[in-house]
Image (spheres, rainbow over the protein chains, first blue to last red):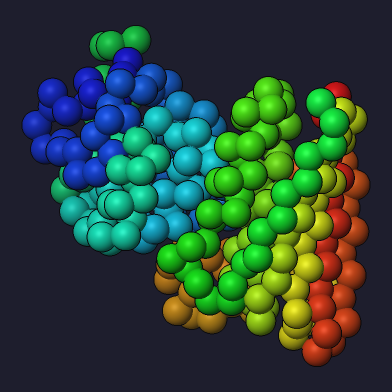
Length: 113
Length: 140
């Protein structure tokens, strides 16, 4: 499936890096400790986190993440938004918990392939 | 491809620019057509080294030398140095402040991540002078 398929669902809105929504999405990683994420996040995975400062964008881009999914309504810093726009990395905001998001993505990936 | 040399200054506590050196290094490696698995290793090494300089040091420099066989990464800072480098290499050990930890840093994973992704790894340090990390990654 693609990142943009998420935006058809209720409660998902892209708040930065909109040009990146055509990317393939092939898995999910959840984490808030950046070095841990750096070591384990794989290419084309959606990264679910509540971290929302500019360095998060660097971690996602360095790992070729499909997108960032901000859980529980976490607010994105302005400089992070600018960086995500520059890097075409989609940042999608939701009010769901990380668990709810993972369950939802599992359903959607089964449906969309 | 001849030898390509890159150098970046990294400022202390400048979280707004943190990650820029490693992002720039990654873009150069992509342009050079380096294998994506190698790029991932270099990205992890340079990112962790860059963050260590930002979080823990008085500022420093990262250099990357690329040739047809290997990529040599060196990160050197201007102190304060590490008293016990063996301790610093332990997974989970960190001296990061609470404030920095709230941003998701300070997991005590940085140096172990660098070592794990290096084919050769050396750390050296002198109190009040410097910490130096040398990482070698082979292209094949």
